[in-house]
Amino acid sequence: QVQLVESGGGLVQAGGSLRLSCVGSGRTVGSYYTAWFRQPPGKEREFVAVVIKNGLSTQYADSVKGRFTVSRDNAKNTVYLQMNSLKPEDTAVYFCAADVSLGGTIDATSSYDYWGQGTQVTVSS
Image 1 (cartoon, rainbow, N blue to C red):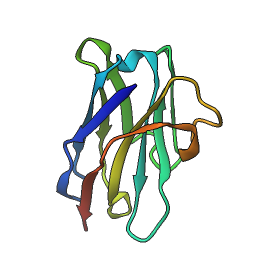
Image 2: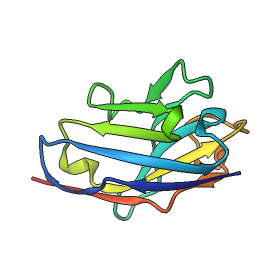
Image 3: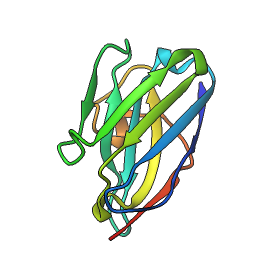
Image 4: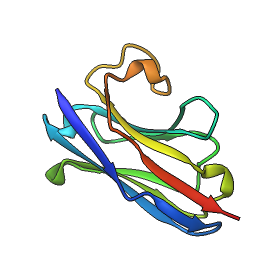
């Protein structure tokens, strides 16, 4: 079992950058698929990016490709989401998620058993 705590959210102007962090406690995050999801106001939670369990590959939602970068530091038991060229439509609560063995696709919320509490990102125009 792993506990996840996100940080790094805030208010930023369009075109700016933020880096989110997700610190794991309990088991090492390197043992898990670790992903970022977001939930815009009034909308459902959606997939953003994932680090595949072995850490050798990543995948992104089309809406963030080329702007966001997900990475993992196993020594610090931390997953990061570097967000550049932010747009107002990136405004959302961002959640970190993890699972040892996905029971479904990597972009489905139902595939992940462990979630953080979320951190708010607001991008002003």
